[in-house]
Each structure stands twice: as structure tokens, then as C-alpha cells.
Length: 261
Ligand code: N1C
Image: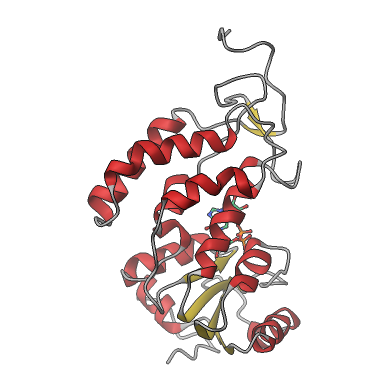
């Protein structure tokens, strides 16, 4: 029992904080700023870690606010070059692989803040100065939990800073590739600035070898198109964008509906 703890931590339904969280975050910060994308100041990493800790340590993990992450977000000034922002929903792996082979596309996890937190779990406890390693709220256990607020805050900032042409990769194997309630649908889409973003390209990807259908004409994509167009941004949609599949898997047979430029 830690001397700083006055009682057992609150019990939640999700997995607890990732072991060695702070060492991982600090190490990722140095790796990113020093090796991956030199240009950001690696001297700031200890400050970044402190701001990250302060956002959730000793707090109820279901009552986190966007303000809690403000100091962290304000410490990191990173802009993504125009035409290079890649959003995604339910297609994280493919989007990341594509961003990687393309080299110059940025998903949120290719920015420092997204990179620091990718695949980690963290939360605090009101009775302790340590993270709760036993359990954290599951994503559907409460609305404003440590992780969901973090992704909402940084997704919003990522979208606000996008310019030129933006791209979103959606999962065409789902009945609703676009959902308004997703982080993409409710934090990113509505925070694109029409004064900076002129074109919005949707790529609807299907499982290789699976049923391929014309998702661009489905009601879900029509809804997305209406929102984008209403915001005065030009909308385009492609099924199985050939450039993505071609780069990823050279042996993919020609799929119907592939209309890459
Ligand atoms: O809710 P989503 O997808 O539509 O969110 C995806 C959207 C992307 O464009 C990203 O820029 O929002 C950003 N984003 C992440 O980068 C991210 N990395 C890890 C949002 N969520 C992210 N996660 C975790 O995945 C987080 O825990 C969140 O709740 C899920 C959302 O994934 P989704 O439903 O596939």
C-alpha cells in the first residue's frame, strides 16, 4: 500500500493504466522530437510529461474536462503542412500504414501529441498521486473520461489546423462508414475551417477479398457529403482508392469501383 493512498482506488470496468506509463510517454517524446521529426524541442519533454500528469493525476477519471488538457496542448505547437492531413474512422491500421508508406501524410498519431498516447491507457484516482494501474473507465462507462477527453481535445486541434485538401479514410465494410457520433464525425468534421480547407476527399476502403460495394452512394456517405457541401467545402468520394491498395499490397486484383486518379 502506497503511503500517499488513503483508500483503495475507485474500481472501473476498463483495463488499468499501462505499466510504466510515464517512462513510455517521456521516451516517446524524446524519440519523436530527437529522432523521428527533429524540429520540435526535445528539451520540452519533461515539461510535456508534467503537463500530461497534471491533466489527470488525483482526479476522478470520469470528470475530466477539456480544460484539464489545455496546459499540455498549449505546450506543443506543431502544424501539419497543407494537403497532408489524413483523418480516419474505424480504419486506424490501414490509415497508419498508408500514411507511413506515403511518408508525408500525417494522421493524428504522426503528430507529437497523438504519438505520445497511441495505444496507451491512463487514469488517475481522487485518493492518490499515482495513476490507477488496476482499472480505468471503459469508453462507454462515462462520457468524459481521461482517454476520451484527451482524444477529443487533440482531434479538435488537429482538425482546426488542417488546410488545403484533407483526406479521410473510412471503413466500407461497415453498414455506416460515417457516423456523426464518432470522434471524426463530431470533433473533426465540424472543426475544419472552410476558409482554409477547400476540398474534402473521402476514401471508402473495403476488406481485401471481401464484398466490395459502392459505399460512396450509401446513405451514410450521402449524409457526410451533405455536411461537407453545406460547409462550403468541395466533396469527393472514392471507393477503394487504388493508390492506397496498390501501395499496401501489390498483388491486390483489380477491384470494381476502384477509381483512383
Ligand atoms: O471515433 P473515431 O474512430 O472516428 O476517431 C478517429 C479520428 C481520427 O481521424 C483521428 O484523427 O479521431 C482521431 N483519433 C485518434 O487519432 C485516435 N487514436 C487512438 C481518435 N481516436 C483515437 N484513438 C482511440 O480510438 C480512442 O480511444 C478513440 O476512442 C478510438 C476511436 O476510434 P474510431 O471509433 O475508429
